Length: 127
Image 1: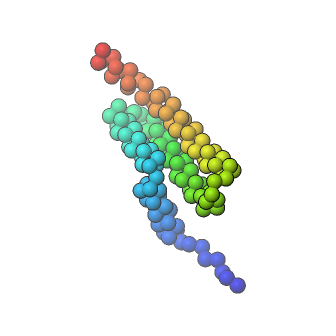
Image 2: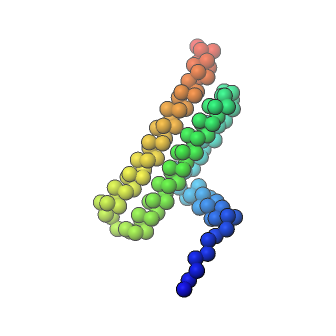
Image 3: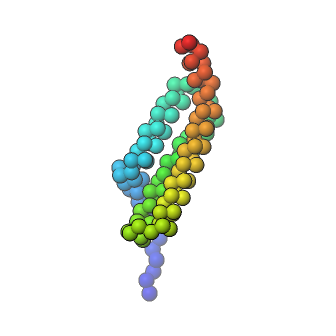
């Protein structure tokens, strides 16, 4: 009888970190969202957003990156289970990509709401 051995916390953390690094290195969309997230954080620092706005922005960025990572995992599993084209495999991948789109739109709306006052002040100084 085989006994299931639960991995320790540090081992699990190492595996999660390894998965995140692999995804960041191999997935162009994740790379794009990481660069976009860092850019948003820089703009948040520059525009001196409130503590609450920092929290909302960090949550939005994390949501988009999390959705993108899950999308990559789902695509990998679908490709492994169905290496040839199948309509249901395509739908599964499209639905996962749709989840990324929903979170990206949500994050964009949050960014507009948070940064609109700073952008309007900047525009009024320029014109």
